[in-house]
Image (cartoon, rainbow, N blue to C red; front, side, top):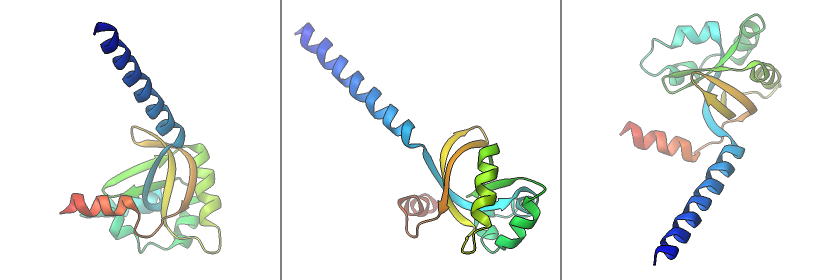
Length: 136
């Protein structure tokens, strides 16, 4: 009986460690508004900074972001992007069809994100549905 319990515990631990490492390999996805840091400051005092920033023009973010930095406003959180993220943000926002609503994949540590990828935010994503549930 004891061998069975030890074997079961080992199998569970192995299964958990495999699941954790595969989730870490994928990176975390965070959606919000990609905006330059100076303009983001104008929206952070609003009740819903992300929603207020959705009307901010992409052209302004590009203009102001050239000399500054880009951030992601996600809900009420302002997430700074790492150096690679800054480069990806400028490349993304200068595309002719760029939208400021994005999903960023990467690893978040504190208030900064190590960015792997920036892409347009998908409509009706699972994350949006989760935010809606939290708001109710």
